[in-house]
Length: 175
Image: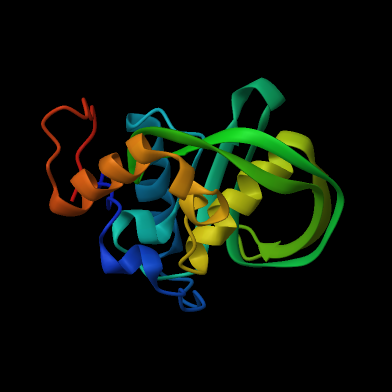
């Protein structure tokens, strides 16, 4: 089911998430994440972005032919070069900023069938995983950039906090 996406300024986006330990409702939550992410034309979505404070996120990178569910993930290692790329987020619509992230990570997680995985990712996969993983710890991409030099971003973030959304052209349900 498509859920409203929680916007910047909502306190759930700043709270560390709890471990997800219920097998009974995994299918429903995963489907809600997929439906909401696809409706908003995203490539990743974390549970707190739909108001659920559990450690779970989904990613679908069609160009990479890769789709995955991450339950209770834990990044074990960051390595490689620092790569600087423009990032955006469904919870901070109509904005983007330059963010530096490590090129390679090693992560352990459970998939939607509760199968345990440990794998190394690099490039775009590593970047999107790190972005979604940050959501589980109450971190947003704007925390990883130097926004004090970007007056337009500060103004837009203040509008989001006030829920002054008239000129943001958001095409998906939000709260």
